Amino acid sequence: MSYLLLADALALLHASIVLFVVAGQALILAGWAAGWSWPRNPWFRWTHLALVAFVVVQTWLGQLCPLTIWENELRRAAGAEGYTGGFIQHWVHAVLYWSWPHGVFVALYTGFGLVVAVSFVLYGPRRSTSGD
Image 1: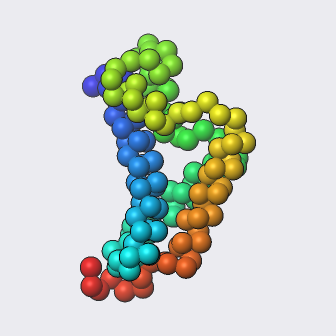
Image 2: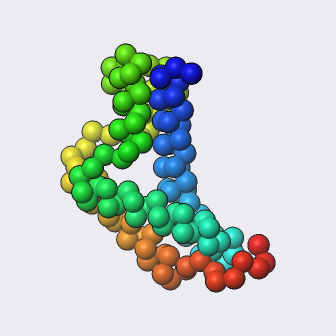
């Protein structure tokens, strides 16, 4: 398997995680408002919280996401420069990577993390797994 193909697969994984985090929070809030029980699934909620906490902490520390680092290393190993390449790569990167100052990301991620934390406390995972 080529390094470029692995890099594209890693970019898709990265996009999937971002989608899980953002759409997951939207579904948590919708579930809270609608009285749904499935958004309180402990596996879903703890996984979601752990991913958001990781992103917020690594941003506070000024660190790049490890997925970004690994993807760049794979692209360099394939002889690629930056994020030029195929269709999947182009669109995944157009959605994921924005050129804003680091402070903007710290504020956005921290604010999102606070929304996640508040909804986790006020509409947390259920204690029993019966019913779903």
